[in-house]
Image (cartoon, rainbow, N blue to C red; front, top):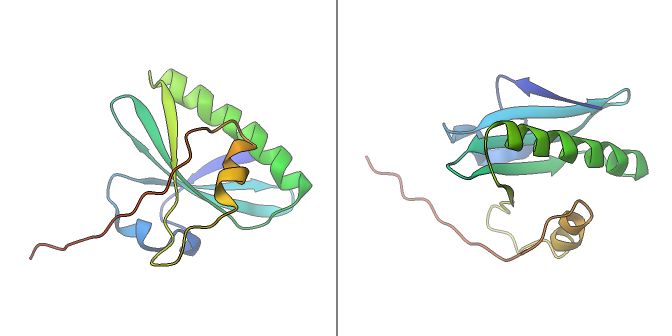
Length: 120
């Protein structure tokens, strides 16, 4: 289990590849990449976007370790929390997301909608 910073966003992260403040990561084990992530640093938190590419018991175990590593990273940066965000690109919110995030200790799940307006 390891978190590797990569140069560009995994295709599963969609439009996030155009967000300049994000750094991109792949989470991998002996079986290969099991998740893609993007992180951004804010004044009091780390913003986390995570797309799980392979799911199963071994992935959940690996993600538990990865969450601890992310918490250590947040502490080193002086952050008090990690905020997990998910975009659905125009689809309905995934009803499994709240349960999935609770597996790793996240609380305060809520629906957040956003839209972009490009200024020429």
